[in-house]
Image (cartoon, rainbow, N blue to C red; front, side, top):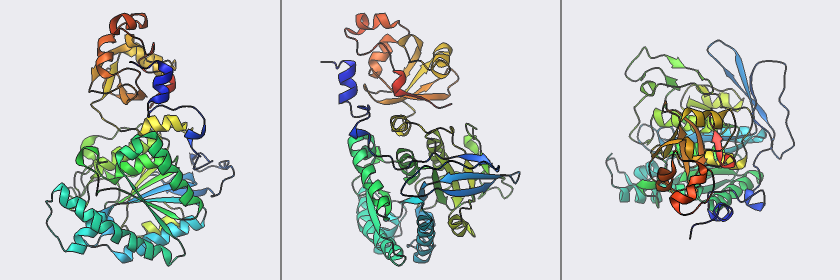
Length: 435
């Protein structure tokens, strides 16, 4: 039996059930403010942690400030490990010192760390680059405990404890499981403990991987309503061409809100230890920006980068968030839901104006094309006739049903399908405009 709209929304794990306890506590009470240097100061509301000002200089030498109360810091295997492929304890000591300094200043820091498989490789003395999924799962099981031991030792020397959080994509796609994980992370921060998040490589299979911890860190940042996401890698940031191949490549210090980056200018190289290249990092930055989170891609091994971070000084490429105002937790959920570019609805220009300017729902009459397969309640991209994704939303009908009612008036839905779940394909309450 097909669910009526109210039951469909209440029973589907993706849809928000209201503003009750299922909504979960808010990890932060302050919205990030980014502005050129002026006399204006951002207003800070009360919270266990305190907002700290982070500073960044653009290519014109102007100072940009970001009031930061919670940040997600992602570090990759190629940064954590030395040339021999083993965990670099000296670097991890420096990293932990930086994180502790930030937390001492009142900033809540969530560390998303790769390195489990790399640690397993070093532990077992394995050097081959090509490995099966089973081998990587076994190496992750060996290396994860080693990785946490090294982190635990480094932070304990500075009076901090660490808490391990292993996640898979279904943990963040299922709302109840996600809320449980979020509450645990929030509680760790309240206790002054450093949450260390990694993908559970021992149990995950290729079909549900995050394509590296870059995407995972962006999803975590959006869902925790963090102010900042910092991606530490082995290059200085984004260039107009691959600096490993072109010595004249020009560094891009600032990417404005909504500014497009040609896919060809992202570096395509990645280390033997890492999973995601620069393209993945730019995708993660965009995902975080859409959720109101400012992002920096920086060289974790760069001179003075960690030391500058202690003082709130940022180096690298800064991505300005797409909106000043914070999204609701439900909107953030939609924005950070699994992104499958094959699952999309192409709408006509009239529907696009109605969604972006009129703040209306998406009706079947405005849908031109249906791509990919999806079920009722799943999140899809909404694309214009120019191919640009300008919104995301949770659908009221499955893909095959929308294909049958596209271009029709809402009054024709029941006659065509034999039932009606809703008069809209995507209701305004379940839709987020990106631009």
